[in-house]
Length: 284
Ligand code: AMP
Image 1 (cartoon, protein in one colour):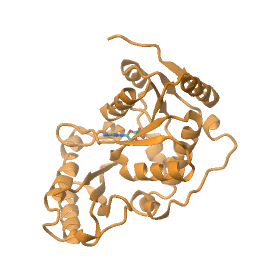
Image 2: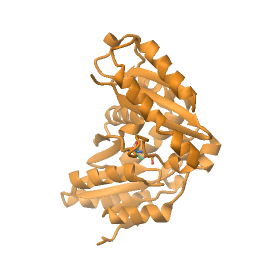
Image 3: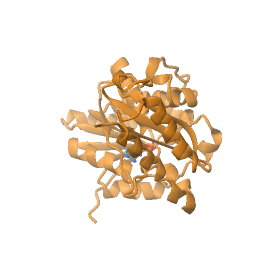
Image 4: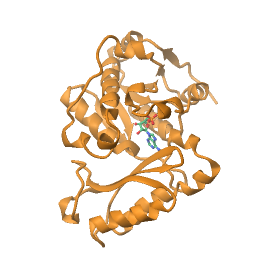
């Protein structure tokens, strides 16, 4: 396979200068932030960014600020040399591998008031997670100043928060949401899937099957009854943290189907030591 030279930076000033140089040459810049352990979901973001921009910058940074659980941070998969190879094969132009000191500098950890979108689901269950994620994404968008930045719908609430961040701080990027890439059995690709045992991998597709079941019952049975049924189905194999049907814009839970023109089901469930997350838009 033909490979292009990919520039590697660990320093934010250098990546910033490189991105400015691209834009001076009238090249649009697509940016894909990741935490590494790359899979086809990440690569789909890179491919979309390649298609829609002249240059693509990908970052790999396991952001300690967004882990509210130290064990989760310590066990987060690291496959750096493979990641770099995959990025080269996708003809990614620049990879940014920042040091945490360089990224945060002297500045204190930021706290944000996201309003309602930050108070539910992950915001409620993982205190500080969105503050840590947003602090780093804000810094990335300031350093890279991309034309467009790409994020997966798999982390739909994160995507909503990033759109808010971009608007609130006028970060000038176009935020592009990308559909969730799944295994043929429906399991959403995730770096954390690497931590599942063979038996757990057999059970894991039930998460998406339950979201599909939820969609099949859209408007047919009451919202709360449907949520309870889905939790009941999942509880046979998983430990469910939440299963909620919310409005896609406000992310507020709905009680009746008439409360939202665009409902979406969100689930977090644990399989052994692994916390899995997924969501699905409900459509007729
Ligand atoms: P992560 O490395 O998990 O922080 O993810 C980096 C980016 O890839 C985020 O915008 C994620 O939402 C996105 N992503 C992760 N998994 C998938 C997937 N299965 N399909 C599409 N995007 C994904």
